[in-house]
Length: 330
Image (cartoon, rainbow, N blue to C red; front, side, top):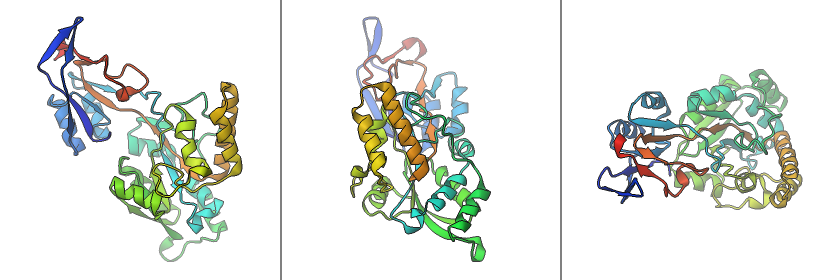
């Protein structure tokens, strides 16, 4: 999980079938990302997932004893989203949701939040799943003037001080804090005042998924290895259940979307499944219960002596059965 990093004991190790295997793995939790980067450079930590500030990655790449792996492993299907709370009256107006989408420059967001480590991923099915992702949609056009015109048309003209209305924004605390700042700046430019609520995970889950005390939330609902597992939960009306984390945060309900998702879940023909998921993505683009944002790169930092740390599609979620320490690089 974020904040948990594997420290592999340098000694003792023993040889078996020509490989030095570890006899124990020690988990360390270092809450300060800068301290984690320093620990890697000092040789105190040997392996970690998304362990350091992104601004430090280029420096760590240059360290002769470290490897920085930015592979996006297929199992994870990374995706981040800006969900609208459709129980908020002002957000029930499609024009308001469209205005928010037009206000966001996803390329700039990728650069500012993830330092370019990732890809713009503007539909519910992540770009890391090309067999189901509809690349023809592209991002909603970045057009602040169109956003302002839509808000005017919806009856939300700028008032004293230039503000039209105010929204509460929460974000999954495991995401980069810059996410909230960049989106607030973008919405402020079109006259929407944004109040950011920075919360610990337990409070965030309660606020969003039980109490519904939010207007916008920046979430990280992974597609996992298949959209039926990772995407359906966020848009299927039957998955709106108070208190259920990482479910239908928008409280979105559309019978046609339900039909498409349910059909894709049992369809065995890959081509037909793609057709269903493409139709689903286009329906979501028309309704905009969320603005899909970025598929962040997976980030692994490892000491060069650690071999086979991510040999399969699971990345660091694998068993480590083939992991070993090469004493020649210890």
